[in-house]
Length: 81
Image (cartoon, rainbow, N blue to C red):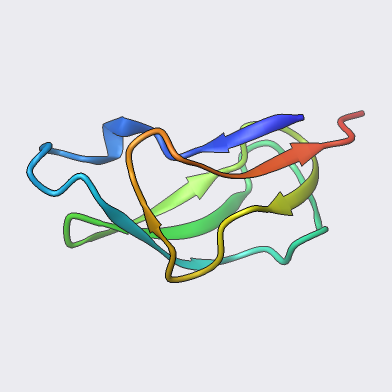
């Protein structure tokens, strides 16, 4: 399983170390390709797209509107071919 991690580089400063999952762009259980946009994240007033790090089946661990911090794992991709 490959973790879907919110990279700390998305935060420009450490003043506001929290963000939020705005919405998932792909449903739980869907097959995704590496490079697909998976989720929209709201961090420090900006919207970012989180990209799939691998190919496989998406498992969502954190829901829309959940608060996230740098390095948080919000889902996994499994069953790679």
